[in-house]
Image 1 (tube, rainbow, N blue to C red):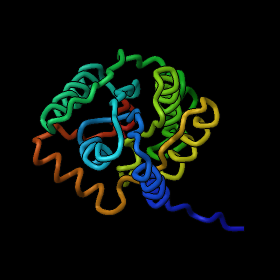
Image 2 (cartoon, one colour):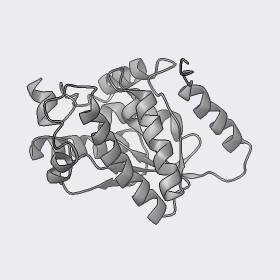
Image 3 (cartoon, rainbow, N blue to C red):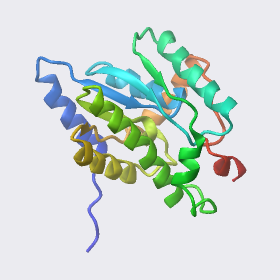
Length: 203
């Protein structure tokens, strides 16, 4: 039996409609992989949520690249006139290498990437739960090269694990990816030419 494809963008919009009908703005923890990917997501979500940006990406190689992307994230928030806090963690690359051990030679879009998504989203869910957020989500679904269905599947598993609501998304839809490219040009953002890890750099 063929699995029915979910429209994660519509699921997100339906959830936002519910939020609009409430008097309270929920707190959302946004896991961000980089400033360019977060640009459109921030522009969309700040209308409905009080946001904190969570920059946890131990996959990024080398450390100089990690720090460069973190600095761009902080700069973008200021350039957009937002007062959101950016939580930048230490560059814990060993966590990534441990998570993908045995899958290093698998290509982009493989189980190696899924394990990387889970590592980052698990940390975001933990942080969100500990710090009293109503929702958590990630910018990762804005990329046409990322498996949005798998990212949402992982997010929903973590929602059940940590009892914090995951905001489904497929941010590339409705010209989201194109908007992120346009915003990157507008804010003169550094756009990297590889996902982040040493394996994607080599590929």
